Image (cartoon, rainbow, N blue to C red; front, side):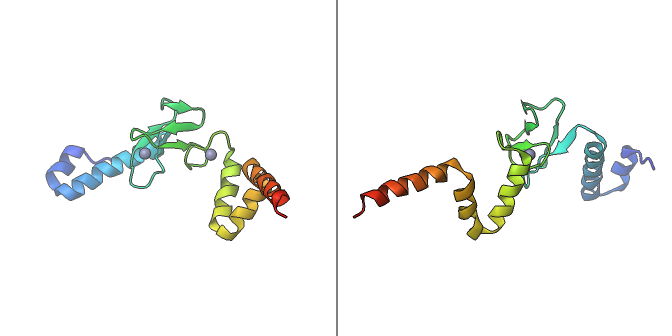
Length: 123
Ligand SMILES: [Zn+2]
Ligand SMILES: [Zn+2]
């Protein structure tokens, strides 16, 4: 159904008018194959992935939020989307996070190396 926006303006209150235009914008972004909403809560800006500034699948919205077009999380170069998903799952369970870090990151390998040195100095 096509509703002339002039008619809507005349018949509707300000609030409904605003909603109507929000709806038009919504449907525009949903219809566009290259437009995506910025996932940052409260941002409300759409980014055209075909023209947006950024690198590869990482784009930046008009308010400077960088995010990943594939997983919609914050830009996470050079990690893969799968890596981020795993990370976020692990973060859901805080008690596991440190163990996961210890098993998977170089930083914690250095840390455990450091603690070995400290251990060696202890009588
Ligand atoms: Zn944003
Ligand atoms: Zn991603």
